[in-house]
Length: 166
Image 1 (tube, one colour):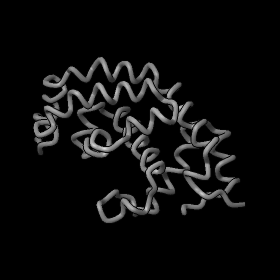
Image 2: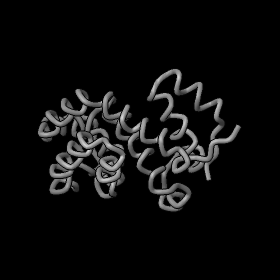
Image 3: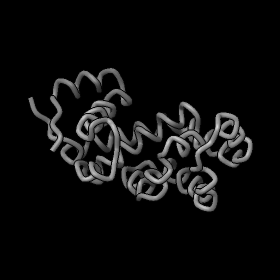
Image 4: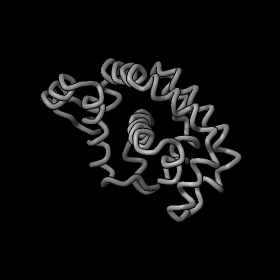
């Protein structure tokens, strides 16, 4: 089990919900050597994977939206795993709805979205897949509120995410 210091969690929580969640996901990334692979996936439980997927999702959405998320290799981790269902169980139903809607775009276009591209081809994908635009706008409108819900769930079920030690 991944161990976190109570003092570390308290300090992060005082800074904000993003910092609080990042303490967990930083520990997960350290446990898997910084890179998620088929070989190290078993080092995390399902809830830890959900929280890590949320971090990847949040980071990629802030940087470049769904196209970047998928081009950077996270399409399968987000859309082909029960991420949306799990995040809904955390209470973040609005975020889950956005992910389910994005999956409706991703699934039939997976090959095109995941193919190796030049920078020009990558940039053109933003035009080709502007169907993601409305979903991205919806996400940014709810991101803070949904992240607060996720942080509260983690806090209320902390033992499922890490062992807290003094």
